[in-house]
Length: 212
Image 1 (cartoon, rainbow, N blue to C red):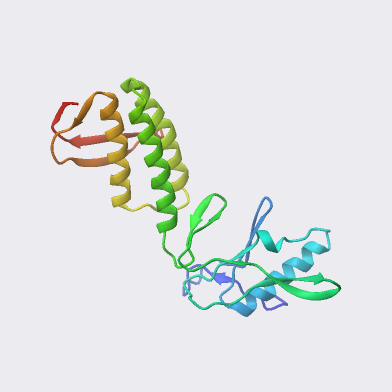
Image 2 (cartoon, helix red, strand yellow; image 1 turned 180 degrees about the vertical axis):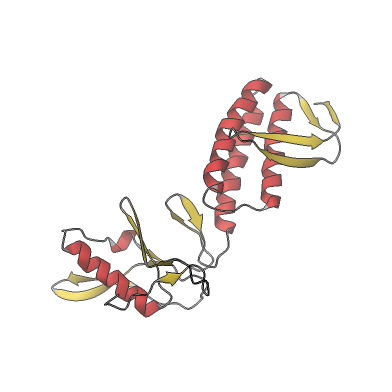
C-alpha cells in the first residue's frame, strides 16, 4: 500500500470484489496491475524483495502479457550487465498467441482458442490411436474414460469449453468406440455429452448403425 500498488479488481463496481496484485504457487509468481507503470513497479519491488533472500528472478523464463490490449510495451528486470545497471526485458506474449501457466493455456486477448486447439489435438490423437488399436470395446471404453475423461476434468476445473467443442469431443470418442465394436455411423448423428458424478463420461446418440 505504501508503494501505491493497487493491483486488479476482479469485479469492478462490486464492493465485495477481491483485489489481487500478487499470486504465488510453488516457485511461480503471477503479478497483475491495471496499468503498465504500476506493473513495472510491482515487478521491481518483488525482485528487490526476493534478492534479500538470495533468490533471483530469471528474465528468460518470465513472461509479460497485456490483457485485451494491442499496445506494445516492454516490462523488464534490472540487472548488472558488464558493470552497468541495465533493464533486461521479459518475454512478451503477442495478444493473439497462447501461453501456458500452471498447465493451462491462456490468451492475452481473452480468447481460449489456443487452449481449445491444444485440448482437441490431444483428444484427437488419443481417440485415433484407440480406433486403430483393435481393442475390445470394453477395453476401449475403459481407456477413453480414464484418459479423455480425466483430462477433461482437469481442463474444465480451470477453464471453460464451449458446447460445440464438447460435442466434437463426444463425436471423436464415440467414433473410436464404434470402430472398436466393428460399427460405423449410418446417417447423421445427434450427440450428447454426459458428465458422470464418478468422473466418467458416456456418448449417447440417435444413430443408425451398420456393420463396418
